[in-house]
Structures are given as structure tokens and as C-alpha cells.
Amino acid sequence: MALLQKSIDKRSALLKATLCLVNRDGIQGASMAKVARIANVSPATIYLYFESKQDLVNQLYLDVKESFAKATFANYDSGETIKDRFEKIWYKMAHFKLNNKEEASFLSQCDNTPMIDEPTRQEGLKHLKLLFDVWNEGKQQGIIKEISPYLLYAFTVYPIAFLMNMDNRKLCTLCDTTLNDAFKVAWDSIRR
Amino acid sequence: MALLQKSIDKRSALLKATLCLVNRDGIQGASMAKVARIANVSPATIYLYFESKQDLVNQLYLDVKESFAKATFANYDSGETIKDRFEKIWYKMAHFKLNNKEEASFLSQCDNTPMIDEPTRQEGLKHLKLLFDVWNEGKQQGIIKEISPYLLYAFTVYPIAFLMNMDNRKLCTLCDTTLNDAFKVAWDSIRR
DNA sequence: TAAAAAAGAATGAACGTTCATAAATATTAT
DNA sequence: ATAATATTTATGAACGTTCATTCTTTTTTA
Image 1 (tube, helix red, strand yellow):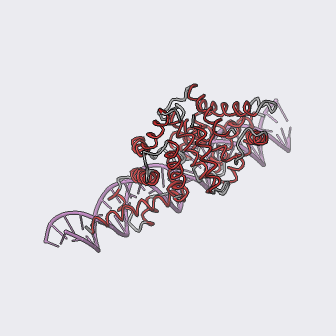
Image 2: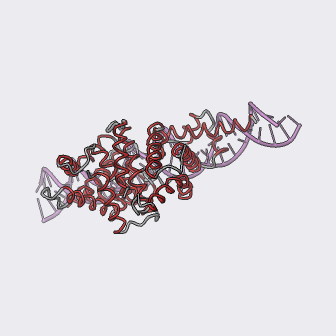
Image 3: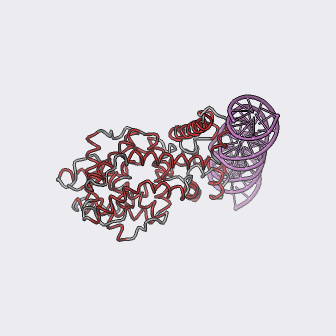
């Protein structure tokens, strides 16, 4: 149905506009008026698709998290070794952040804003299940340290965001060499 | 001079009010009117001490960074071993963030906002010189990996902010045991 | 009494949101 | 198949509020 498609297009145009603006001016800088203008739509139209600015940003958050997870766990094979699986996931996360800077920077901004509510954050976390699986198996096999997934995440995945930030600010170029170094650091941090 | 002291008091009352509000409602939620009300001052008075909201937030940023650095490098002794020095610095950073949650959360928010300008960020970085010294010496002695300080920071210090966030959201309690685990992870990540 | 500091009221602009209305689309009746 | 009608979808203008900032006046200090 053409109508439905048109609706979907408009919805994603609005999400895309929001992503772009948040990336440029911060969450508070992405006003509904600006979002509307960039999406070629009347401000009022936004409220046909989202019930508030908070809703808009939260839905965008879930949307981006989902595509991040999709990229991260593509070709996931539970038959591979723990290290191989972790390595592939880690590199895919890094490459997603490098190749989708707007999305990555948006997620970074979301980490510390009160705009994203707790239920939405929880929902977003679910996408990481496969990574937690790998860690749990790794612990059972004595390959990975017996520590909470929050620690594992903090020291392997979270740092990528920092590096991406530095790269954006031209302070530290994230070339392949740097990325390989970074993975080594990440792996050394959590392996037994 | 009593007058000067009163000025200093008012300035820090304004900074404190800003810190408190940013922590509660985010940077955009800390309006000049609210800051004034909490500091028991007229909105206009703020402009006697700061030339704009951006200036206010940037000065607060430097202020907090400085007290963070003061706490972090207290009793620094360049005669100690690399690991001892790093360990003490790391724990002091962690404890500062645990004991000064408002300050820590504020700094986290600053990581991803366009409100803090690049010169101010550079200024804030200078406070970390001693940490960089330790790392450089460590590299020379073959104790620490030969990688950029940005990588070292990303994998040892930056994760603390994540853990603090989880702690604030009651998802992962940062008790002494967790903290010790975390330090082990941090050290394993960068040692040779 | 002169100068500095602080106040409160007021500024235009921008905010998120809603409203009455218009355009576009779907449904029904002929 | 076409005309008339109902329904959805979208609009631009306007809402009340709040924003950062400034202006004029009053209070405090020297």
C-alpha cells in the first residue's frame, strides 16, 4: 500500500532529521521547528508520528540501537571460539561507530541525558544479549574474568566511544593500526 | 577585604547552583533564572560574574576539572614505581567520582555537549599532565604498552565514568570489591 | 557624596505544543 | 465509471511559556 509506505518514509525522514540535528547542535539544539524544516514537514505533522519531543528522541534511540545491534551481530556464529566471537563482535561495533558517526555520536549523547527514560534504556540493552552470552560462556570456560558484564562492557566497548570522540575532534586518528592496538588492549583487559 | 570575599562567595554560589541544576535537569534544564533563584541572586547579577551561559558552564567545567585533578594527584610521589603511582592515581580518580557524584556526573555530561568549547577542553586536559608522565615513563621502562595516551585513557580512566553511571542508576553497585576488580582490569589492559 | 554592585522588570526570540482548517485519499451511492 | 461524501493526513498560524540577556532603578559600599 502506497499510503503506508509514505507514512514510513515520513517517519524515517523525521528520525533522520533529528539524528542530523542532534549531532550538529546537541539534543537541546534539535528543536521541533528545525526538525520539521529539515524533514520538509510542518511542525504539527511531527505530532502525528510522535507524541512529544521526548518520544521522538526515545524512538530514535531505539531505532539506532537496533541498527547498531544488527550490524554488530551480523553473521554471528555460536560455534566459533569465545575469542573469535568476541573479536568479531568488537570489530563490528568499532566499524559501525566509524562508518556511522552520526549514529555513534548520538548514542554517546544519549548516555548522559535525562531525555532518554529508563524503560527505553532497558529496551535498548536487550539488543546486546548475544554479547552477554559470549561473556558468560567465556567465564564458564575459564577464558574470561569472573566479573560482572557491566565491568566487561565498561572496559571493552565503552572505550570505543571515547576513541571515536577523539577521532571526531581530530586528536587521535582511528586508523587500522590504532584499532588493532585497541582491540588488543580490550582483550587483555578481560581475558583470564 | 570583605568585599572581595563576598564576590568570591557569590561566584562559587553561582557555580554550585549550576552544578546542582545541571546534575538534576541536564545542561539545557539549568536555565539562568533557575540558577539565579537557587543562588539567591537576581538573573542580572549572574552577568556581573559570567559573560554568558556558555561562559558560566565552561568556567564550571574548568573549576571541577581542577578540583578533580587536585584530588587525583594529592601526595603524588615521582619516586614510587610506575604501577604504584598509576594505582594510586586511578583509585583517587575513582574515589573522587564516587564521593563527588554531582561533579562526576557533570563532567560526564560535558564529554558530549557542544556547550564546552575546544579551548576550554584543552585547558582541562593540562591537569592530567602527571598521569601522562607516569605513562611515558612506564613506556620507557617497558612496563606499559607502547600506545597513544588516548588509548591508555580510554581503557583505564574513561570506563570509571561508565561504572559510576551504572552505580547511579542502581544497576551495578560500586563496592570495594568491584572497584578492586575494576582496577585489575584497567591495569591488565595497559601493562606489557 | 560618588561609585560600584545588585535588583527587578522587561526585552525579543525561541521553545514545545495545539488548534482550526485545508488538502489528499478512501469509501459509498448512483 | 463517476459524483458525492466521509475520513484521514497535513498544514500554517497561534498558543502560553520560558529562554538568555539587557535596561533602568535602587541599594550598598567606599
